[in-house]
Length: 143
Image (cartoon, rainbow, N blue to C red; front, side):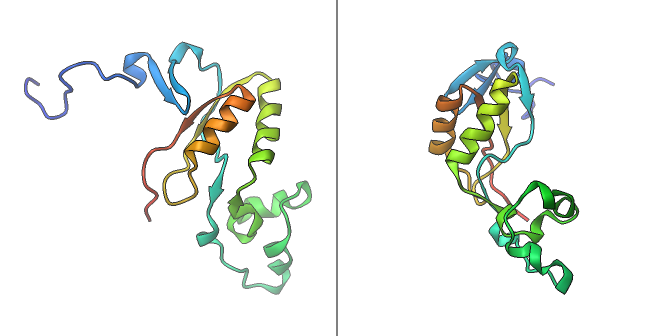
């Protein structure tokens, strides 16, 4: 379609068709992405979504830290736990992602956008310290 508004006049500098993706530390050839987690919130602030449980039997989960013992219950309602709505600890993220890297992981796509805790500087620090390629979300979170 000549002259179409949907056609870019020249190849885009990044994106799958260019052979590169943009990470928090710069361009990366797509053939170097390796084992990739496609949707992981490394840092997140979804505290605005937290709603105290209405049932007395669930209230204990509201303030309980996320643990192996309550993951089953939280999988049914992840926003029930205040702790599950807030991923602020960079050191915990580094520890967890270092384990992923040790198991052969190479890239993480973090869809966290503006409005729910995206932190480009922290993600760049995490990428440098873990050796991972981190692709960061770039849009706005809207409901």
